[in-house]
Image (cartoon, rainbow, N blue to C red; front, side, top):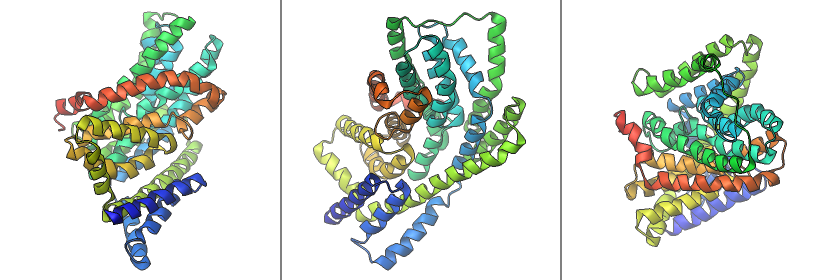
Length: 434
């Protein structure tokens, strides 16, 4: 217990200090892990072991799925898919008060699920929606808040890289089950924002969209079908066992290339730049995964997860209280840490506790990622917050007030998902994945 306390103080104290002075998070993880390991092993041992763990952390076939899905998302961001999904969203929710706000939410859900990136959604959908909303008299801060709050919904609706990272660090939790588990929570996240936006829009008397004719509506659906078919092909293939998650990700890359050329929104000369962007992004993520493997080994060797488990269980053995405490900690963590490093660091700490109190690892994965999805919309370092504010050309300070109204339904939805496992586990069980 004393070793765990000393190691955890050095590990997390140094890690947060390095973050505070602006050291890149992956470098901070590596340095703090090596220094903290010196409290119980010699330098030559930790140097050798750290190199070994760094390699083992990225020596995983599952990580290819992460890389391919990131490449697929990069291709789609340049492939003219966003406007077609916005038109479809407008067709579905355009008759509600504040039609363009609801269109923004549904557009983020659709585009985010295809691209697998909250930041890409906030930029692509927000970039197209903000000028339309401004033209119709929407408050720019309200428009930005709706865009920011709904952008992470696509991180829950598959295919999503967040579940792949969690599967890797949790010891091989079924990616297919996680993908299916994300549907209802992701939809609930979007719907909770829409309900809030509905009441705000009704009070502000924001307009509804013009009704489309049957012919216009049919054209919108036909235009969007090729993009939506990606989800059906990839997720359907994975769930049906036609191919693995990694093979499905490769199929997504091929499909997105064909679709982008079909839409005539991407040129051959753009491909090298897209590949370069993906290489840079995956390099960052892989180094992060490798560095986190060192941290996971240090925590396990020092008994930190066990010590934290004993500490939490000493407060209460009631699963309701334990889950509430974990939610509070994860919400706080999400305010200053991006989703991928947070998954890599806190899954090994909280998953054993969740298992000990009878929480299914698939259900816990959804709880974890939902918490961190809220985190990327919050100050001081929320990536979706910064991108959404920048796209809307409004200050973060002006966005915070309307965003506060969005956090209330998001937290209520989080508690609903936390304490009612059915929302996460119903679909995986329906498809025989659990």
